[in-house]
Image (cartoon, rainbow, N blue to C red; front, side):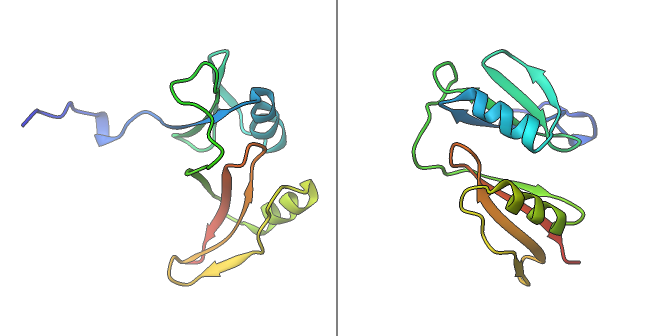
Amino acid sequence: MAQRPELPGNKAEKLITFIYYKDLQKGIDFYGNVLGFPLEIDQGWSKIYRVSEAGYVGIVDEKRGMQNWHKDKTVQICIRVPEVDPWYTFAKELGVENLSEMFVSQELKIKAFVFDDPEGYQIEFQESTE
């Protein structure tokens, strides 16, 4: 079996989830301006936003990326925050698409809500109930 390369502290530097947009500017506006995440890496047709210490969302122009835009979205972006209620109020004020009611999952020990971003990817904001 091949020997796995060593990672300092057994941790990667970053985890980037790339999502593919037909309209890159919509993603830039939403993740950078509306949600206010800082642009960490600007690759021109790919914009990588820092969501947490080592968690990132990459918005990619589907005409240039390694994948293509698809109508069916099979990725959910989950953002864990200390308090979810202010984010729910914010989402309601924005009038985001497909905003759920706030829900609590005893099994998962979370309080959360979901909505769709401008190209249909589901975003979940959650807090721990423990």
